[in-house]
Length: 283
Image 1 (cartoon, one colour):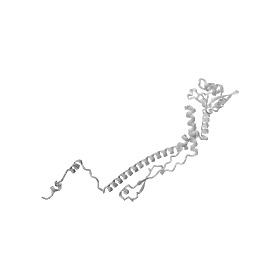
Image 2 (cartoon, rainbow, N blue to C red):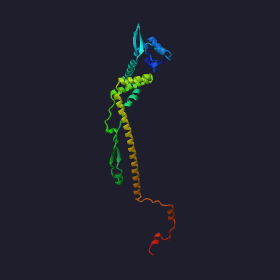
Image 3 (cartoon, rainbow, N blue to C red):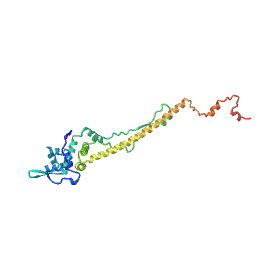
Image 4 (cartoon, rainbow, N blue to C red):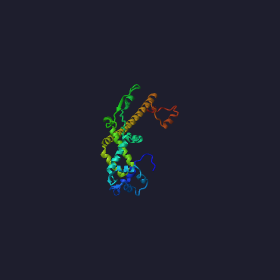
């Protein structure tokens, strides 16, 4: 059996020592040879190699109750001792900090508080700018932030060491469960950790982070709407300013639209023809 890192043979023995089906459970004390024969019978893989390893019996004893039968010991799997071993593994794995990638992806990022800055949006007084001269200064106003934003609530402090350690334990248990444990053993470990560790501070902190992230998303949407409204108003002001400038350049006279018939009539030679007002004069 080729492995990259040291492997606790206990993880190889667990599926047969603690089977999912209650009918397959080992509920009696057996000498170590008989116990190994019980769990390796009909099994495929490297069970025999693991059973003959020097540490196998020592790791077996760590998760089994034992009694002395003459000159030898007999063992029976114990769920209580197994949970103590797995709980200890989770705590030791979390104690010195998880591997860098796990620490970054499953501890630091989930505990990072979103930086939420409520910024007022400047808005020019367009009516004054349009009504005054070129030297008219724009009045500045500030559009209010949403009333339910983080600006009205106390700032959430950074995660405490207790909260960080609790999350590391939870991540370590999930990693071990997903990679080394059967579903039944993983569920038992989860229940054991809930009893042996108080995860309330962690759960409260994560719940508060969820609320803050929701508020941050609402504020970003609010700011986006304000920005769009501000841009639309600026476009309207630019169009009015451009139209006013054109009117000033043409002396305030607007070009009137002329129909095609009128243009054709203007081309006709009117020499000697009376004007239309001549027909309405006094006779």
